[in-house]
Image 1 (cartoon, rainbow, N blue to C red):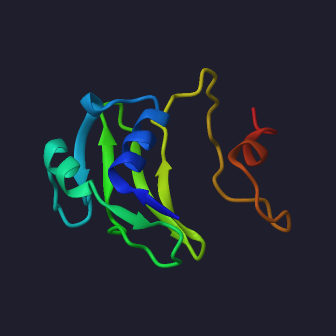
Image 2 (image 1 turned 45 degrees about the vertical axis):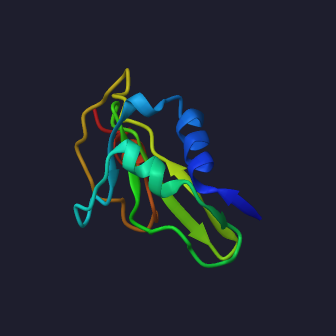
Image 3 (image 1 turned 180 degrees about the vertical axis):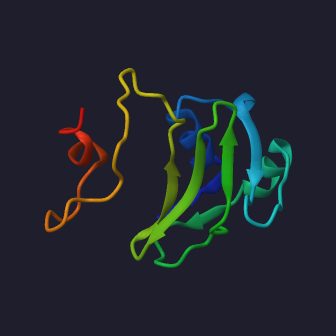
Length: 119
């Protein structure tokens, strides 16, 4: 399916509850390559087949928003798309941690499972 990359990106930003005004970084966190929003709009205004099986867009491209949320490229054998993270929100109720290691023979356990019986 042929889509416009700029339009896809603008829809992803809107879907996350943000606008272009919320963008604080576009580029690669790993390498430091970056560009401004107007530069991105100019370069991203192209059509591509996002279902071709191989990524078309740089795999390390991220957009960081003013609340700390990130949008990044994801792909599999079926295509590519934008993924989202949400900003960290501190839990309303917190509890002390007394152990980090799982109980022997119990397999994977959460912090709650490991610590719930300790006062």
